[in-house]
Structure formats: C-alpha cells, structure tokens
Image (tube, rainbow, N blue to C red; front, side, top):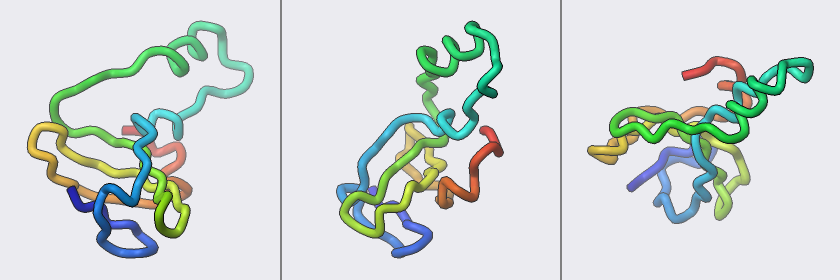
Length: 90
C-alpha cells in the first residue's frame, strides 16, 4: 500500500505507524459525562469499507496523517494532515 504524505509525497506504508481510527480527532469536551468518555476511549467500529485512520509518518517528516481508505480494496482515497482535519468527523 502507498500513502501520500501531504508534506513528503507518496511513500510506502512501511514508513508510517498505524495508530487506529481517526476518532481521536473528535475528543469529547472536558466536561462531557462519563458515558461520552467511556464510548470515546473503549468503543471502536471495525467496518469493512471506507475508514478514516491516523498514521504517523515515523520514517519521514513526523507528521500525523489522516488516511481515508477502503479496507476491502486497500484503495487510499485521500490523505490530509491531522491538524487540518481536527474536529471534522467522519
């Protein structure tokens, strides 16, 4: 699989560290209730199809990249810097 880093260009996925679903960008407010925090910390979907994931460009520029990809076909649909995607949701 090839991932296009918004800063470095197209790279082999082995340059990146996979960190999971991009829900980390949609963190609840600090005063959100226990149920919201429990859901945020412990519950994840595992869809077959399009996902938004966090990847760290470990062997490159060190940027956090949101990768929208299809888990069935392995097609990378788009990439963006996490700082630009924060709060935009899925």
